Length: 382
Image (tube, helix red, strand yellow):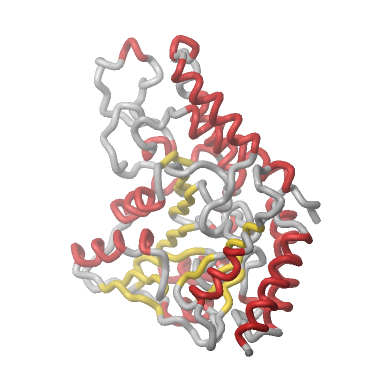
């Protein structure tokens, strides 16, 4: 269990922030690293061409460790939609085949697959939300020989329900389908090992559970797709691009591994330096330790909120770092406004109240949350 890490963040004592799934606050170390990177642009004569790729490779190595695979399998991207489009462009889908996704899944992991199915005259199928939130069983029941791609998260962004990716991968191994993951709501807070799950592509933005800046992400690419087509035809992912004086010796050959999928203008020392600082801290804490610590806190909060009529997925079906709770009688907007007036911040996604703490949430924050909920229901019952 990890003790409170609030001292690493700029969070006032009167603020209780239970909304990491929306956007994580930046640690002091991340802000410092981003500032140092920006300062290089302020004085570009201090940012030599020998450093131009160093920030990229440092971040790539660290991201590979969090994914659970080699850095050669990691590309630097600006967003989940960018990474999803890479996967959609490279995975073959034929007439009559099916791409599976989940009802109420985040749209960045929906639109490219809809377009893919329209172009291929294939079926795009949204798996209906199971009444018990057992998404794993529902997905397995839909996989068959016609399944070309299963495009899913590890943790559902609304309810916090989690999916057994190992079982999904095993089913796809039998039928020949591909697995594409959006890990933005899990990577960094929920244990994931690419060497075991073996996704074809796994995509993650850095601004949530990777605790980094906005407009940056990573995509993990299985070696079977290392000869695929990048989204951009840029110069920086070509062979020989590290030699600035030779850039006009135009090359068709792309860089090795997943680097061929790197975005243009990737060498942003502010963004990459901040992401590296955040990834370093996550690896120092240990993802399993983060997960266990957050699970203990969400278990306590869930137990307290159940007394007021909130419910969610069964504990064994819920990610430890995530609470998506439903209440049939209250106005969520009024409830959230009540909390916000007391500087307690949560969010709503679909019909669910979403509470997602991190290591900056301490016992005092938790006590304030429960007390504020009690005061709301006290007034509500009058």
